[in-house]
Length: 486
Ligand SMILES: Nc1ncnc2c1ncn2[C@@H]1O[C@H](COP(=O)(O)OP(=O)(O)OP(=O)(O)O)[C@@H](O)[C@H]1O
Image 1 (spheres, protein in one colour):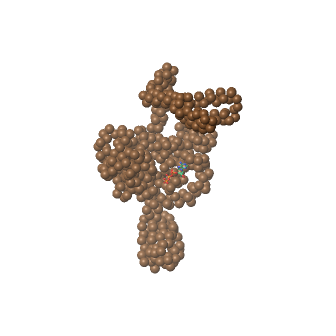
Image 2 (cartoon, rainbow, N blue to C red):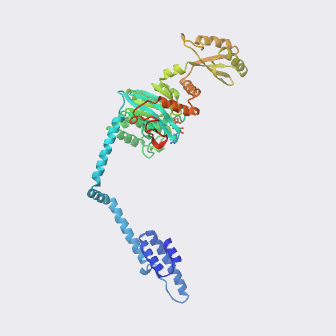
Image 3 (cartoon, helix red, strand yellow):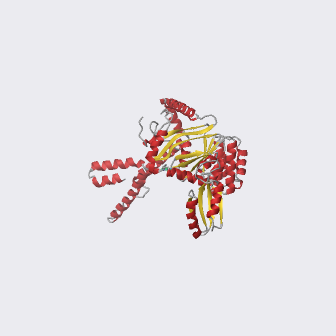
């Protein structure tokens, strides 16, 4: 319409008029143009009639007169009918069938089938490689590196393997890289370097945020995931899940109307169904009350009894300590310690937490005497009515500066003269976790020494065939985060 108006303004002469007329007729196949031009014709008709009426000439045409809007109505009708016919053809799959026939004639389908077969072969070969886990091993990660942005690695040099029937914990502060490792394991992200091997038929994943369809009811959700996991007898499975997780009162409630805790329970329940050898659980007990948490613990126990491997993250250190046979502590995407909770405790623990109940004045005196009598006392924390500190003790028969437990009692009796009472307790795993992070920080494994660390890590990387397992030096690197020599 704009083009025609411009031609009307700038063009002067019969040639321009012919162009304008031809375009006007041609554009009638566009319904918007037909409608707009129709309104323009009505306005022109009205204004011309007003002018001629002054000279007593009646030139007004009725809007339905065929020479005023006839071609617009005809164009709109024909376009409408054509659109209707095309719609019917699409709905009846006629066009698809026609295209298939043409494809067959042109032999495209045959070539596509060949491509599919090639792809299938590739996937088969990949799955043979992917299932290269040792006997009893459910999942293995080798030398994983991933950078979200150039030069900053969210995951660095991560190795671990999890056996069937074992619960493996990933511990780390916020942003340590736990969820990123899970995304690598599930294939949501491709590692820049490294390989992941897992036992078929694959991995179940309970992500940090509940991925359930909000419009499905609880029952529909359980049935859907059950079918997805290949469970044949869905009714007993549904009953079992509803009863185990106490979800029966909400069986017809849509997921979007469930409480946060119930939604989490449902996510955990549908993750654990099926028979995948590995189950990844990213903070499964977040938003849950203590009773519900126990249900999840029981579920994890059952998974382990069924010889499935569980990889678990949680911000509850005690939860990890009690559920996991082995724990990896992550800091800035790197595993800084990995062992059983007991071994980590004995290696980084051996600490006792001492609380002396006294006022601020006595606390000042006590601090002075502690620095003389107990130089190993650390992390002194002053509160209104107590002073707390950590002290490492040595086990009988071992050598070192740390006191024996009996010696510690004797020292405390001597220094706590004006103290109402004191209490002594063995450090919890939380403290061990903090100590591991602290010691890695003081050893320089933080962002400040990143380059040095990366160089050290490169030295540690295994020399493997570049085609199978990569290193920063030789392996394949996605997204061009690092230059490679090969
Ligand atoms: N999509 C993204 N784009 C860029 N950076 C990201 C992205 N996702 C995560 N990161 C960064 O990667 C690092 C690791 O994040 P990740 O979510 O794996 O940590 P996390 O240990 O799971 O943390 P949390 O305990 O809080 O869940 C963080 O520094 C984070 O900011």
